[in-house]
Image 1 (cartoon, rainbow, N blue to C red):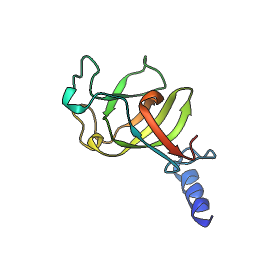
Image 2 (cartoon, rainbow, N blue to C red):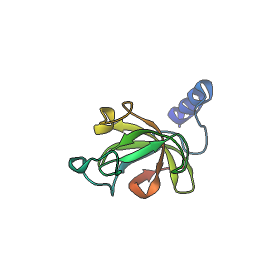
Image 3 (cartoon, rainbow, N blue to C red):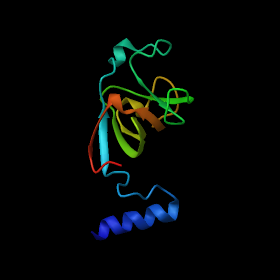
Length: 115
């Protein structure tokens, strides 16, 4: 319990979300997208887009790939605010390494204490 209290205090100090679930409490993996061998940035195959907001109308800022591990920070409907933890997303084919933003939950298998 002391560890959770320290995490909460650290989140408040640096401005991270402080809801009932905190980053690290909810993790998951990218599922249901084509393998990277079928990657095509223009058709949308072989990756899951990471966006600036919770919807397909928001700007694409990065990519995560089949099997990548992610942490979940928050949720709005079917959209999850995620951060790349490990996998190909640390060295993507397009965009910045280890993207943080919004991704559609249909392609995420999450577990833990989720927001």
